[in-house]
Length: 162
Image 1 (cartoon, rainbow, N blue to C red):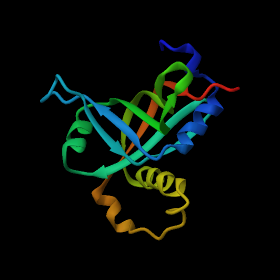
Image 2 (tube, rainbow, N blue to C red; image 1 turned 120 degrees about the vertical axis):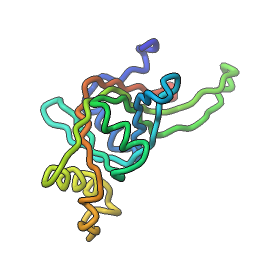
Image 3 (cartoon, one colour; image 1 turned 135 degrees about the vertical axis):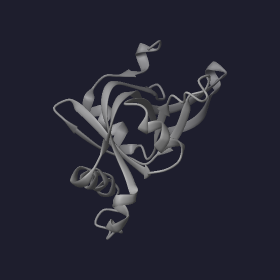
C-alpha cells in the first residue's frame, strides 16, 4: 500500500468497515475475456472467528457468475462505504473520503445444510431481512458460496482532525 498513513490494520476496525458495507464486489478471471477482469456486485454476509474471515454470497445456478465460479477456486473482492467527494479549499484540492476493504479469497460452493447456513448468515445480517419468512423452497435452485479470506487490506481517507 502506497499511502501507509491511510492503512487500517486493527482487525476490529476492519470488521466495523465490513459491517457498514452493503455490497461486495467480486472480481473473477474470465478466460473468454482475459484482458478484462469480471467484476460483479453481490450482497453478502460474513463470519469472523479467531482472526479468520469468511464471506457468504449467493446467486442463480446459471449465468456468467455461475459459469466462472464453477471453473475457479479463487477470487478478489472489494467493498467500500462512506464515499463523499470533498473540496479542501486551503490546499486547493478535491479528494474522496471513504473507507474500503479489499483482498483475495478461496471459494467453496456450499451444498445442503451448509448452503442453508450460508444463506442464513446473509439473511440475519440486515435488520430488514432478519427473521423474515423467506421462500426456502428456492434454496435448491440457489448457489451459495463461502469465500475464505486469504489476504485482507483496509484503507481510509478521512478528514484531518483539527
